[in-house]
Length: 232
Image (tube, rainbow, N blue to C red; front, side, top):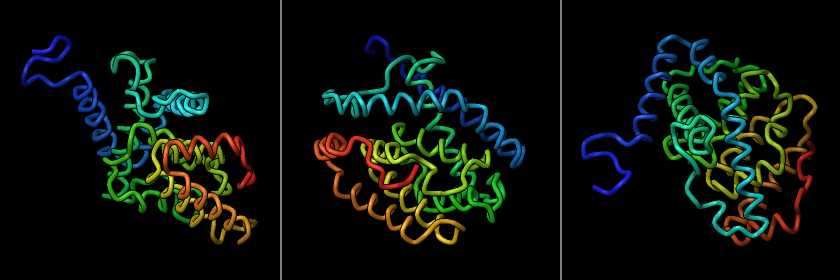
């Protein structure tokens, strides 16, 4: 047995943590829409730390750290303040919530006829496999869900900032494209949002598609540190 690994047959600390969180989320799901919503909102502080950590990684990559976007999460899973804890916690909640919403749309805690409700449903529908959501992309999805649940989204094109969309694409390109497309689709028909505004979102999508590669992505960020393709 390698030092630091659990004995054969015993789950790792990470697996135990995951099992515990899934059990709690399942219990909340069984309690209905309000219970699941409250469970999601109970991790707001940790999810915010997770998002800050992901942004910090991209900025480190921009500054020349070639491992910033690929190195393992730091810290102990059972240390509440560690990067590994807050990011894995956020990922598990996002994955399990999307599974629950897909299985039973009545659990979605935002009315379908609201802007936030449209944003959530468009994004949920585009994510075919919630388990494929990476730790690096999940904090951005949580941020969108949080804003939708709290009624903070008036314009889907502003659900994430341009920088956040670029950062997401650098860390999880597949998810980044789904998010951009979902926000653009949700914006259609929203009063006050013009076709030109939505077209700018499409321009951003093209930019993201053209800058998938790690080196090209960093070069893109260097050349346009804070582009304003979307009004913020």
